[in-house]
Amino acid sequence: MTKFLLLLFILILTCTVLSKNTKNLPGVIQDHGEMILIPEGDFLMGTSEEEIKKIAREFKKSYKYFLSETPEHKVFLSAYYIDKYEVSNRQYQKFIEAGGYENHIFWTEEGWIWKEKNVYEEPKWWLSGQNKSGINHPDYPVVGVSWYEAYAYAKWANKRLPTESEWEKASRGTEGFIYPWGMEWDINKSVSMGKEIQPVGSIEEGKSSYSVMDMSGNVWEWCSDWYDPKYYISSPYKNPPGPKEGQYKILRGGCGGNSHSYYFRCSNRHWAKENFWDAYTGFRCVKDI
Ligand SMILES: [Ca+2]
View 1 (cartoon, rainbow, N blue to C red):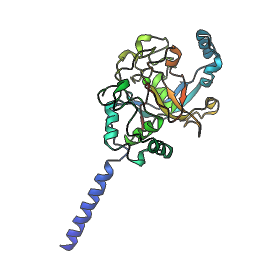
View 2: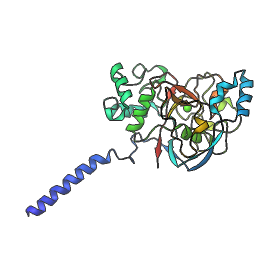
View 3: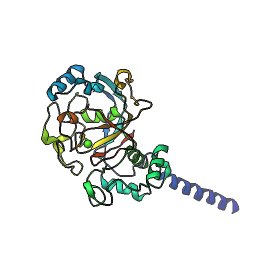
View 4: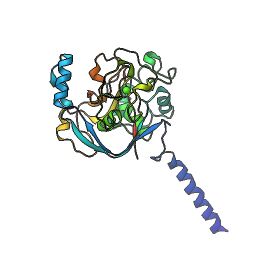
């Protein structure tokens, strides 16, 4: 009898430990966001020198402004999942409610220090509702978030921020498209050129060939990579992880407030400090298979 009770006790203890761990298993997606599988394989990343000279002439800019997009090169990526939509205020609210701003384990060391020092408990404008922020605008993309906050959210959700190459492949597909929908600029296919941001996934016609939404416009999206203008010259062919260090993090995709179509090309690169935030900067996440 004693032996039986002891076995029962061990069984109950094991179940309790397992059920606690299950909550944080890598397979559990905390924000319930829809994700799209991007199959493994090659795609064309960056822009050729000939093409950037053409763009520079069109917009009367120095071609050096676009030089970090060169050389155009082939990249192989293992399969991964990417969020179909930019992370919404509705999803971000779950992170706040789950104690995201109170739990050190979701944050980088620098991010935690930055947050504590500034006493941040939510994104900018979250409580005032300005710039379509906060719970009164549940379907809009979260804005006013630094890279630190995007990183912490992704970790809480059991996802991660995309590498720059993962972001670009999900946007332009394997056909070498300039824009998510094809080769020609179309102002009606993205939230762009001075428009206010819209609820995520508002423009169906602007989806990429993988059906990922808002890769062009609406809000800029944080990536995991540091920015190095010369990275493409020596980046590895397989699953490039991004530079080891840097001063700025990569942003991709352009935003409603931008007024030149070159920002909305899939290969356009942009960057900002980790603590940067504004009314047009958000993110989406990816997940390993
Ligand atoms: Ca976007």
